[in-house]
Image (cartoon, rainbow, N blue to C red; front, top):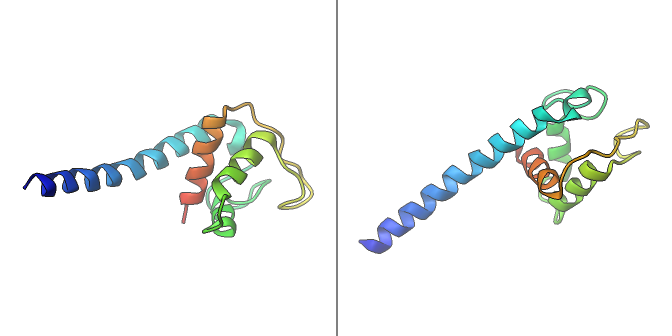
Length: 104
């Protein structure tokens, strides 16, 4: 019985954890200058975040790669307009990258 309860608690924890990351990522996205150039569903100045998620879905190291690009900026990946560096922590960049990659 104890094993069953522990397994049930573990599964519940995983189910609760995923939406929390998504919520934190979305709130963080909305609190940063990202929203000036990006939207979830459509291109603004930069690509739609769902396009980014689709492009890098299933790629090894995608979270780390996106986190570095979010923090340090990038150019030429989605067109001629550069994405400037962002004043965020490594943890915030990682949270944003995880959230972007979770979008479907």
